[in-house]
Length: 557
Image 1 (cartoon, one colour):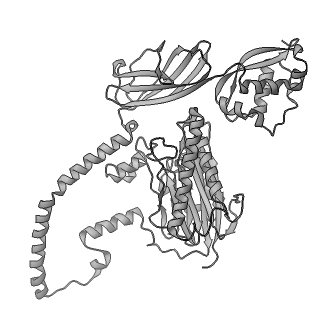
Image 2 (cartoon, rainbow, N blue to C red; image 1 turned 90 degrees about the horizontal axis):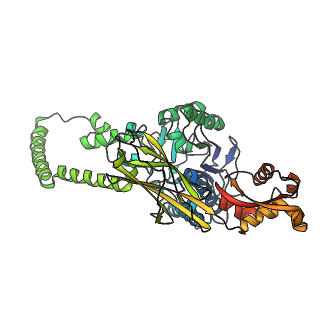
Image 3 (cartoon, rainbow, N blue to C red; image 1 turned 90 degrees about the vertical axis):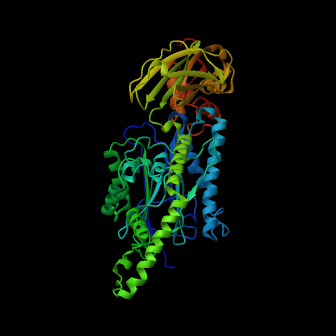
């Protein structure tokens, strides 16, 4: 096999409506070396262990979707190393696919382990799609609705992965068309993901690896691209920018932004420049060609048969016509015995039942929790709750709202149920008595309608002991040696400080010092590159208010 030359490029964009980017990705042009790296649009030679592209689309919003996708990417990095990619792993197609699936299973377990350690993030999850360019072939494994495509000038664009989504199931069942799927409601509901607490993750591979052909452009993307622009537009953009992979990625992302940019958008591409197989237009049937082929097969009339010479003698007519008559009678008897129309009804019923079981929240007339936050205010816990009605209007008696704290039902104050208009949204505020003891408290809100549909969400409050490890660390860091050597010059005070996920810890301490008029000079001894002393505080208080003990000079009120 001749040397395969290729180019790569990858980028991510937060979009126009999201505050955080929950997507993550990794591209490696040469798995023979570590750490993984690449340069956009630079030409590479495919090495012994190949090249890799990965895209992960995190979900969970306030519940750390970006953490889930980052754990998935980190797991991929730890497995795709020269030490792990052994001869035993790459000895066959089946060992390669097993290795890729094992990596996803490991990532799933790592995310679940993290969620157990940090209950506030237990609703997080992520999709993943991996493409491994190895030994002249392309291997793809995925979970969720992040997609893999191949574009070639001879074949156009075709999707090689298949979404694990509610809408894709409707397409498979024939209830909606592929054209309808793009604009169909609930297109964001996926049926498989990493960190699904109800089941073990089920990665999927291609039916067979794809040969790397000259001119191929392999595209991986999150639904921030495929959900914003149609495949036809993606195909046109790639065709117009195929000479420059960086321009290709930039133009695809810009098109998603121009279409509204409602979600994070991540795009990774790889182009086979030389050394691949010759591209045969028939190597992959497009969806349209596939349908035509099925139609021809049912009618018993392929293109070559249609062009075949028709027998023209009376002798052949006399032999064939009686045989055809017998065949029609036999088929009629078989149809009556098998009763296929009854089986079709059974199948439809079973599919409907399965759809209901898989996704209650996908029902059009369900009431869904779209936002829930609990905040400690003095001696009470205050709640803000947002609901989205996906169907007809609901009266105050058509639904109920319940809150539990660590499994115990709470009495709500200030909650008045009201009518919710059709396809409308409503925000409620309520409160309950705050716990007296210190510890972690998880509040779960549950909405139940008279039609039997439920939706829930949770929020965690952390109430810390006065002399907790986290509190002590903050006291020590802020006061440093001065406080330890001469405590009489300082006085202590309890405050509520908020650590926001992603904030720089040094800036956080400085903001606390400034707010309470503490001398910033006390912070100069901090090492901005070391957070070992404050890791527990940072992880335990991300996104929440924490009671802290601070100190300040007695003469500096």
